[in-house]
View (tube, rainbow, N blue to C red):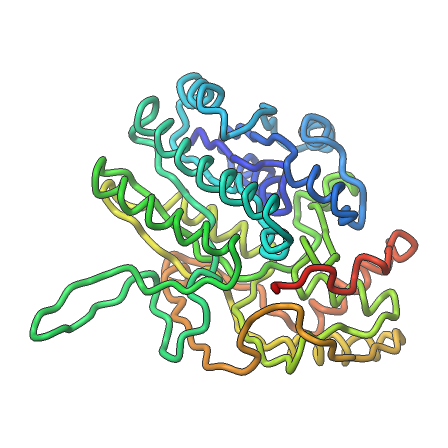
Length: 382
């Protein structure tokens, strides 16, 4: 297929572009370097400096990978995006082109406004570019399990049937996000559902949990193809943060009681999930919602796993709870359904001790690049 990857320079976007190209698709990667800019502005640069997107595509090609086309531009610019859809005629659009950090969205007015404007305008433009220039293009949108929050009932896969006063209907599962970033994802879902009903678009909304990892088969071709591995408190996910803290011999910073539970997945499983969504598409007029994670953990469970493996490797890992900078439940019920991707063929990579050890060993290669000033929480919800 012709596949356009929007946000193709990101932690997930660049590995996805390489992965889809290697699966035989014609890939166009698009980015405006917003995430790089925000990371630089907040002193949250990745563990390893990454080449720009044009150079990445060249290095991938020189390392034996297939060609990945590149366009640098802003998805908020509708004329730019519409031209890409008209000229490339994508059969699938993978939409990562959003400000990706919950903590960044909670820093203050300017960061909140940027998150709101960027994320909703990008999604709105993707919808209209497809409608006007490539109406048979399926949209695969990266959502987040954070849209659901932590309700005291089982979380269904996107939809819920409700009996009310003797009548029954099916609705999107109630959302109660914990940051403005996650709230923009809720609004994305509502917007997509509106245009699916109106124009019969085919949309898959992937409710993804936090991702961990810094290697993929394609990235292993050359160190310069590594994903943007962030370990800071703003752009780094908790597993990636703990891995770096363990290597740097900084106590693992568990926020509050540490009972916060989410569904996690390996970076390689993100690539599986996205390719399954593209290659086994939703039907026209369908908003297919898939809960994208492989196994749930509390923060305490992750910390204990990293501590145990790290100590066996001689890293002397300690765990040290810190006051929680976030406004969230620290102990709660959490039981989300996640059958859809398994039924499509997902073969999960679980967080075994061997996987954690491999990740720690990979991070240890870059120990001298760790800046411990980026680890402690710098953003508070109130």
